[in-house]
Length: 125
Length: 187
Picture 1 (cartoon, chains in turn blue, orange):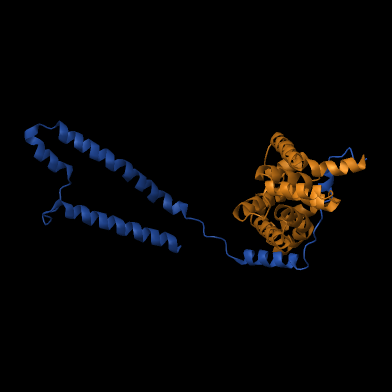
Picture 2 (cartoon, chains in turn red, orange; picture 1 turned 90 degrees about the horizontal axis):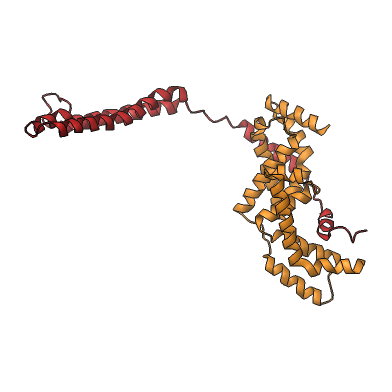
């Protein structure tokens, strides 16, 4: 009878069964209760983040476009007007700012400050 | 009976009664530990892996869609976990060539007793490449049920059959003398 049965099938059908140790259920339930006691993770506040993310994406897209447009303007301007056209690339800065880079630096710092404050506000909720 | 008990317990756990998970643990601890044991051949590690499987099941309980039996979902989850656990820390197994060498020496000495032969065959299974080993382990765990094996592994039945065939072919070629001895005796 057993000669027709695949010996591999025969061997594996005799696989030993092990019984759970006596404390297994209690141990699993302890772990489950600990798991249940942990407060659920705070979901990311997408509702609040979406407008800022959208604005950031818009800025990232708009800046290179504006830069390209301005550079094209400079390139297409007559050679004699080039310095004047170039000066139009930079926004007009207040009179106290002798160096145009000061305005950009101040703007960047302000933007970074707003970004950090906003992130901290999101994280604290 | 068990299916309706599972469903009731799951609903109660999801409603906030964590203690009802104990019913699920009591019903499925045996199968989950035995399945883990077949993967790692270490009783202590099997219990640790089964405990982790129950914890993951608890966390993911809401993801069980009732179109499949709870047991199918639980076995698939446990199988995934056991497979990744054994990838992380492999079981201590003999390479397939080593199994062959042991077999030959002992066969010349006067043949193998049933127990020794069984042990050699099991060792050979654990020395198989992973994809054949997993299919063979689950196939015999599910009492030679190909669809259940396929569901646990998340593979098409055709793939399971092909791997099963190839795995058994490798085993037969490696263990031919071992498997031939009892057949000659019985004839």
